[in-house]
Image (cartoon, rainbow, N blue to C red):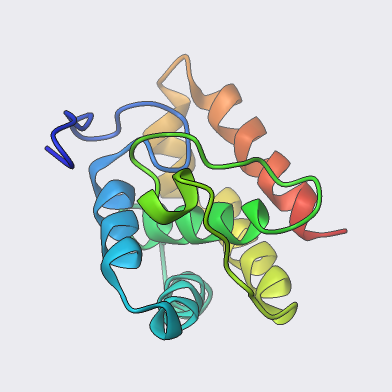
Amino acid sequence: CRNGKLRPMGTGDVGPFDNDTAADWSMKLDEAPADQREAIIRGALTAAIDKEGNVAGIVADEAIAAAAVVASQRPGGATITTPYGPDFLVNGGTLNLPPDLDGLAVRALDRVLADEEWRTLWVDSADYAEARVRLLAIRGVLAC
């Protein structure tokens, strides 16, 4: 439960915040002092880029959420409206993020999209195509 709202269990849905790990990461970002939020985002993206082997699981979930946060602050990026995203962004807040995070987010998403274990977790689901499309949409905003 988060702010009195029920969270999806496990994978949940295909959105970048629709799993327990991403919702928990969002809460951590939300509760952090404003001057520490960039470091939290950068840490999640860098963890996916630097991790050896598969990135599926916690590392991928946090990197996807971080990339979605960065994209939400860029022109053409989707506004975060899900109750599982960071409350300060859901409520209209913003972040002043440096442009280098865009490239980090693209690299992190590329690692996730290329990860065989991540694909395997989704490929047996009817939602794989939609999950991939959503990641590519986030990536598209950041790659401009």
